Image 1 (spheres, rainbow, N blue to C red):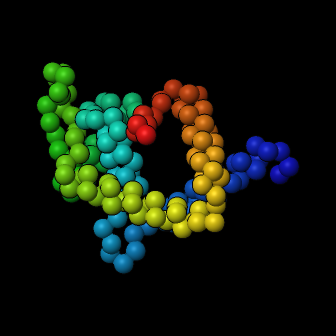
Image 2 (cartoon, one colour):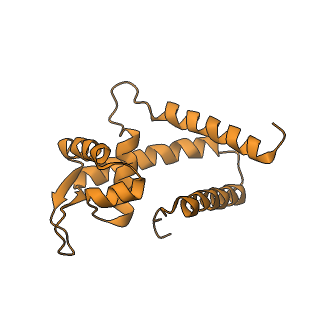
Length: 152
């Protein structure tokens, strides 16, 4: 494991494990599951999206997205609306409840990161975020599916 890429692979595997453990709801809390958080985050940044657009964005088949959006609809986290651009496909838009739950989840995640990074200098956190963004955007470039980012 002496090659840097081997070390990156190992550390990303460990990071994924930590994120999976953190994502599990505890004590009947109202946490969003991972797929709901990601879909809501994408719609939140990009705006209303159709099943086809979600399928293209995530590289998932429409049946998977149909199940995920059905769960979001059932929980009143999204609603179906006519395409604002006049297209035929209906789109999913985040509801007030969905926005509230998404922001609560994001606050929970940010709070956890602040605890982990408490001993880091602000410039170290900023540098780490730049490297993560570069890593993610390079993956997106190779995959052909860029992820829109919120304006700072």
